[in-house]
Length: 164
Picture 1 (cartoon, one colour):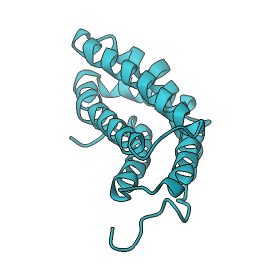
Picture 2 (cartoon, helix red, strand yellow; picture 1 turned 180 degrees about the horizontal axis):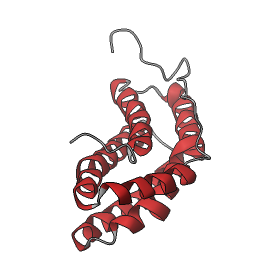
Picture 3 (cartoon, helix red, strand yellow; picture 1 turned 60 degrees about the vertical axis):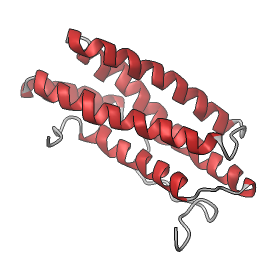
């Protein structure tokens, strides 16, 4: 299903986070000497965009979805996943991720994003009328205003290497 324009800002942020996950996956195995750079990039993603993104979902999107009983179990899962992901981002900030926990984090983040896109967003677009989605979009735009508007460039250690 084509994404409703009111949800596109969240989807664009999802795309950038998925790009990070793909790069982590393709960089395997990540040498210990590069862990610092990867964790710095993860911290930067959270500070510039993902932290604001989670808040916008929790304060605007999820309450709108809670009006539909069928979405409540999914929302409970997504909120629990946000808590787990926040803890992972904290480990990145503390530089305590390992070469094993870094790819596990990328898999968790990727699965979470795909669940939001394929289940929550799709179903919300079916359940909420266009006018209400437009109002939701305006609220999301306001909630996302503090997110960085630029791409995060990989460092020498975190960019894809030839042949990967």
